[in-house]
Structures are given as structure tokens and as C-alpha cells.
Image 1 (tube, rainbow, N blue to C red):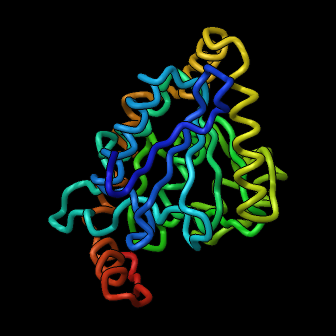
Image 2: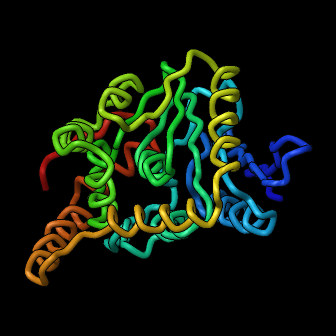
Amino acid sequence: MSDVVRVRRIGPADQPQAVVEVTMANAARRNSLGQEMLDGLRRALDVAAADDCRAMVLRAEAGVSTWSAGYDIESLPVDGSDPLTWTNPLEGFLHTLRQAPFPVIAAVEGGVWGGACELVLTCDMVVAVRTSTFAITPARLGVPYNTAGVAHFLSALPLNVAREMFFTADPLPAHELAAHGVVNRLVEDATELDAVATTLARRVATRAPLAVQAIRGEITALTDARSLTSDDFERLTELRRRAWTSADYQEGVRAFREKRSPRFTGR
């Protein structure tokens, strides 16, 4: 399938409806969402659809400390161009995921960083080990998140929770997000994570697939709805341009690559 993504069918042999498990398997890169990983995930969706998938479980390998480090920082430009346009590869994949003809359950163990939080929130349900944490990290790097991505967070998180996560870039534990209804099930360890996520997926797989697909499409369309005036869009684009062309942006990316704390100046 892919060197960094594994796909297997986990439905019972006597159940014709497919439940597919997709595992991100690039621990050396902390499952960062670079082009290779995104291509592998996109192919996994195609394989699952061809197998009459009724529900998918998306996970990392058991025992990892980081479920996914989010957008691949090494791929961020340093030439003054917009680092996260609405057409960037991650947003493109998330759009594809939202259009999948089956629900996707995120089975989370470990840290979830930056764009990986958006990936988890794009999934239809979330099962998480209690010790997992979630951090929206662009402010640590001086990266202005794209407006489409921010809108997606606002459709999934309470407003002040989204503000706290964006502005502080500090991790929130899974139990706090569960209290806000973002995590559906909290579990104690990787073994329970597998059992609960698989049971949930198999339950979904027994329901009427056309009804589930239609309702999923309706939920996606209604929660994606965000209207901006042309003036709003121009103002937000200018604010983002100031951020991605700033010295702080260059410093944030450089500090990440040099494995040190950034020194931001506001310029």
C-alpha cells in the first residue's frame, strides 16, 4: 500500500460490510503530514471505497508518543510565499476526507499537533487514550493558519476553547476535549483504544449505508458553511500576508529546524 500507511480490513469474517483500519506508520517522522503521508492516506481512502467500506478507523501505531506532528514543517516555504494557502496539500486531503462515502473514526494515542488536530476534527468520531494531548501550534512557529482551517476549528470547538488553543499553542488533555464533546470516548490504554474504536466502527457498519452516507453529507455541508464578505476576505488575507512575510515567521521555522526556542520580535 505505502511505506508510511498500512490498510487492513478488520470486519468479522461473517460480516460482509467492510470495516477498514488505516494506520499511519512513519514514527521516525512523527507521522508528520507531508506529501508522502497525505498521498498514502488518499490512496487508503480509495482502497476502502473500492472495498465497500462502511466505516474506517484511522490510527497510529500502538505505543507511539506522537499520533501525528501535523503539517510537515520542513516543507514550509521561506521565500516569502504563503505557507498555508487554502490549496495546500493538507487542506486538499481534508476536503477529500470530508467527501468520503463512509464515516471515519480517529483512534488517538499520544500527542496531536497543529494540522493533525484539524485531521482529527475532520473525522466523524474520536476515541482517545486519556493521556493523549491536543495542541494547535502555529503561534509557536509564527505561522498564520489559513482561514478555511480556522473556520473548520470553529465549527468543531467551542469558541473560547479554540481561542485558547490557537493563542497559547499549549496542549489540552483529551479529558478536557471530551468535556466539550469533541472526544466521544475516553479509554485508558492502547488495548482498550483498539477495542472501543473497532466496536464503534462495526456498529456503524451494520446501519443503513445510504442513510449514513446521506446524513454524513448533510452534516459536512452544514458545518462547512461559512460566509465571508469580500472586504472580510481581503482584510484577513492582508493580516496573514503580514505574518507569513515577517521576520517572526522566518525565525519560527529556523528555530524549529535548529531545535531551539524561537525569539519573536513582532516584526
